[in-house]
Length: 196
Image 1: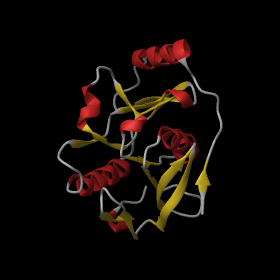
Image 2: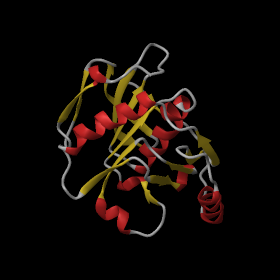
Image 3: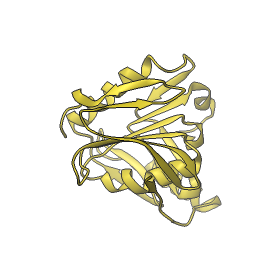
């Protein structure tokens, strides 16, 4: 059984508020993502067409599997202040009620599923920093589509968060099917994911 973990000191109180203020005031190029990763405001380039295609294919399948009062968001800020993180995941499945609060982000604990699709510029964060933060926040499921994995493209579903560690539920090579458990109860065919 595999696990992911990383240890970094948390941002709290005024330090977190200052980070969020810098994040809110940072203008990246159109289409880029501005995130706080391990206490550092980062700007990532717009994702490649293949990246967007994979996100859409997953979103289309998830749409039929979620309750009507949940949403699938591609630009939603998801915060984990205890890990000095505010991320913009490729997909976040969140009950719509969580978006009733004012602001530009929701607590990561509100998410039912986070999907990250690696790019060459963010693969390390998607494999280590972000899942540790999502696990610590108690996000039940984390789906990592890693077209840049050292052993070849993979899709891994993590779950059962304990502390800042997830257990691997299922790991497949891209091209195979992967099953998402309740509350989704769906099988994703990764065979039509474009190569990145």
